[in-house]
Image (tube, rainbow, N blue to C red; front, side, top):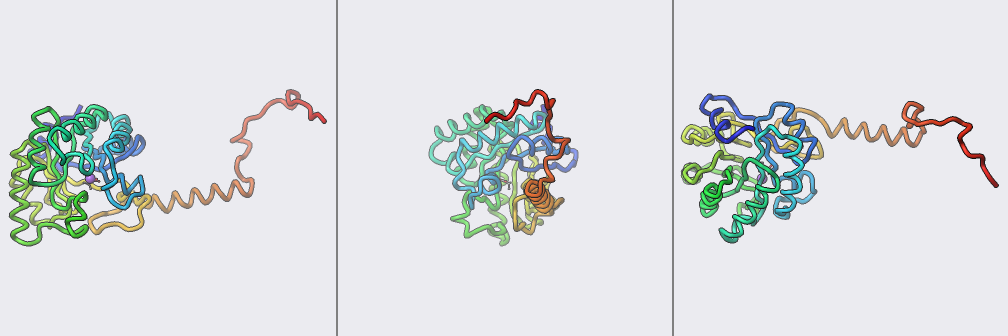
Length: 275
Ligand code: KIV
Ligand code: NA
């Protein structure tokens, strides 16, 4: 079993950490087979696999449902599960209750929480209770409605200083890693240099200790537009579409099924037609 200590060791050894999201059994299995160091069951599943237009509608039960499928598919990979919108804000008791439920039922290695301020205090509470936490700063999609949209964060000096302070605080509070989303590469590199925990970037440049991307973006599967920070490695949409069209065509033209796809019996055993 891979541990938080092993992930931290990779940073010390200057070995870059590869991470991708996964939301179900087959995606988790493929990610593990491909040698991914970490898998994130991101609440991006709200958009990518449930068809919502943000991560806001995603529930604790959604995260558990998908998280369980992922841990079944990738039993030897470090799996992080997102805590969804408002599941770690109301009170410490609620936060602990939700976190315990997600952590126990999914069998994840860690949970991820977005945001600074009071959220950083929640990291400590969970950590003390035995739940490793990954922090998430920079662009935090659960706050999209108070952030003025999906934009690069930390571009001016004041914001940059704040991000550095928040990152340090996340480490002090016991985070096992930090995800930095949509942050200028110079700032992300600075944060990676300052912290001893791994900094995993998404849209945060090559200076981070690792990279994370959304599974469906990497494969170009079910997504129309890609953010600037994504490099697609396949055209899954295109070849899946062609395959499905060919299947429809074969059904309509009786080119499928062929004999090799059909079962047969002796003609004698076929009952006579009555009436
Ligand atoms: O939900 C998600 O996919 C994420 C990554 C973008 C870091 O939180
Ligand atoms: Na997320």
